[in-house]
Amino acid sequence: RFEGIPMAPPDPILGVSEAFRADSNEVKLNLGVGAYRTEDLQPYVLNVVKKAENLMLERGENKEYLPIEGLAAFNKATVELLLGADNPVIKQQRVATVQGLSGTGSLRLAAALIERYFPGAKVLISSPTWGNHKNIFNDARVPWSEYRYYDPKTVGLDFEGMIEDIKAAPEGSFVLLHGCAHNPTGIDPTPEQWEKIADVIQQKNHIPFFDVAYQGFASGSLDEDAASVRLFVARGMEVLVAQSYSKNLGLYAERIGAMNVVSSSPEAAARVKSQLKRLARPMYSNPPVHGARIVANVVGDPALFSEWKAEMEMMAGRIKNVRQKLFDSISSKDKSGKDWSFILKQIGMFSYTGLNKNQSDNMTNKWHVYMTKDGRISLAGLSLAKCEYLADAIIDSFHN
Ligand code: PLP
Ligand code: TYF
Image (tube, rainbow, N blue to C red; front, top):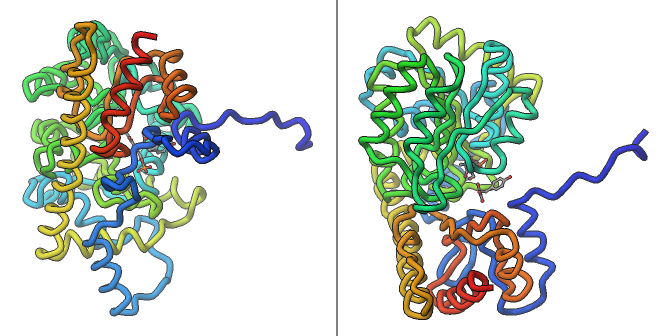
């Protein structure tokens, strides 16, 4: 009976927003969830999204069910955006693409595929990683273990550790990689390091599994941010790629993304696609249409597409500006001699501050700065005007 069901713990990231809403102090700052805000700290709907929605209204598009695999125009646009329109694997029909329920749903679908067709295979995930990765594989009953990624001593990548752990994993494991703007650390491998990662993955017959949640948000360039994925695909490898449009098109609540499986032949791709559809059907039957149409319209229209790129650069640029201002504020205020340059080295939406749990608690309890307990702050939720205040809070908490 229901009386026996225990209370579930809150989500470590989305739970932060709940705590933020409950705080009545005016100085409060929500740096928990990775969601873009304007300089006035308001949510932002991209102009290209509004334009695409107007077009859709004018056309009077209907609300009939989509096929299980999603909107054809979206699936074409999304794989071309990821791999480049002239990528040979697309022409060779070696990619199985299905629309998914954003990044999370797409990852979950791939996890179900792994559980069904690679029983016992392990997924290697970075330590640390986005909190939901472990939940996704746990719920899909896919075993996972961690590879070293972040080195607190250098506040950088533990590249040697990463390579050793990938080498030591059982042959044929799946290696989950963040395509760009690693969440939560903001630290990505260099192009040379990506080559070496691809080398060991190939040697060990592992399967690379990319999570691409920030294409266009790391460098401001869609192509540059997909370079890691394209490098693996260019080697002829089989690759899994989950995509999300939550961040780069600001479509968080529309739940739009895709799962792409680059296979060794068109026949294998067709079979994989049929199985992805079979897995989707009893879970959610077919995906929502609204976000898919927005993406298809924006990517499919040259004028909207270039406007989107400009808006993405604007968003990425605003985050870079607050990153610089935060660094300037902290370095001028802090007299301890601590090296804060890691703030500038990290990329994407987040800064991984190195604040421990107690220090993070001090940020929230004393300063009303809401953030995750791993020391991550979302710079997308920070304004230039609040950098000085945040610098005071961080310095106080560090030397606390
Ligand atoms: N993967 C990573 C690394 C993320 O940071 C996120 C959050 O944006 C996601 C996946 C999935 O988010 P969504 O389900 O909103 O696409
Ligand atoms: O890391 C983040 O903040 C984003 C948003 O269950 C997010 O990826 C956080 C938690 C979650 C889903 C999305």
